[in-house]
Length: 290
Image 1 (cartoon, one colour):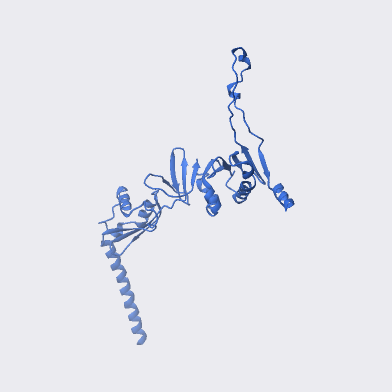
Image 2 (cartoon, helix red, strand yellow):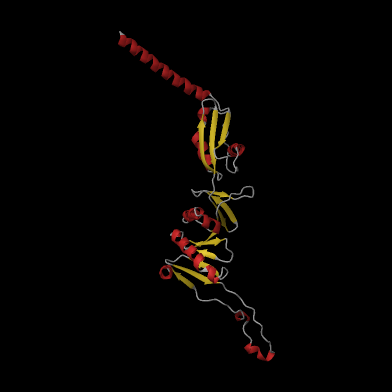
């Protein structure tokens, strides 16, 4: 008798549970959306995405949910549509039990600003672009160059992260310029020269060579002596001396026209052969000096 009562109780509970599920589904089907709540999760940073902006974006895209049955609203479609916005990095859309749609969105977090010809855009770590506008500015590393899907600007991020993590390099580097994937230049805050890093690989060794060059060579040769310092090759630094035009005074005699130098050759250059600093020789010399 006891087992029969227990079975009846379990059966009753199961029926009540099924009834509750059917009632909830029916209520959900009959319930309409009364409001849309928007939460900007990283609003503590510089705000360029607002709650009203997201609502306006939905309206512009023809997505009207208020007043519609909750059962007819596809939260996933709303997510995927908003994710296409260049200003958003992540979007979650949840349907509540009280006729509320909650949208949680994260603004795009730029890590680079790229200048490509007359275009300028910000980029996040995933490579998503956001057009740069006068109404928004982010203090991020600046890169100049033309990038493609095959070689996006994010390929420079490991090197840029290395610079940002080194206090000396962070204060030294003002921007990056990519001529091609094997000739990436940094523009230092020290006026008068650029540094050719080569490809965006092996940068820890390259920056070590650059620091050595700044310490041992530049103070002796002068900080305005070279226009390009290249650390792209193994075990050496190659510096190209600056071209300086020197004004030449000559006495003009009409009878000596054939002897007058071509104006294109009248600039005297003080260019000297390329200077190569061999790391091994530097180390051996340092040992001898010690």
